[in-house]
Image (cartoon, rainbow, N blue to C red; front, side, top):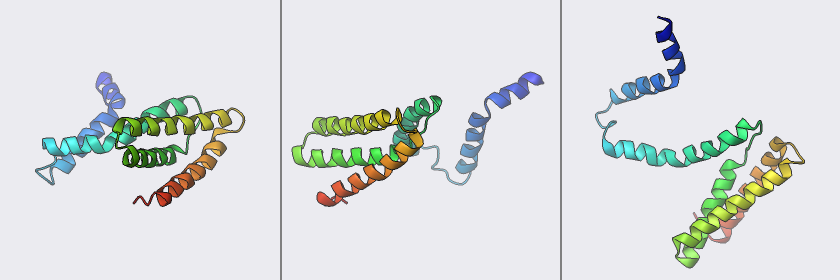
Length: 140
């Protein structure tokens, strides 16, 4: 009996996910179709990648509030460079470089100032820069 209880305690998140999936699937016959599963995974790809990086930050006892703003500025830079050059490789490189630069600024400043304050300020700064970039390039 104790092994069964230990199994449920260790796998409660996975069991809850299965129960939730069964509950949702009971309302529609289209939930378990291959198109819907692909759609779910494609929409969850970006948050999963962001949360993977945040695992290391939170594991080190820090916090990063500017992840969404850095993602927004990277996406906008990708769009601008892609429109200007027509090259996906150049756009991807520029977006990755923007993310590396923003993250390096946060990391450098976090060595002197608490990461909560640094990332809160950079969240507002990067969001403002993204808004400025969007307005300058008339992106929707």
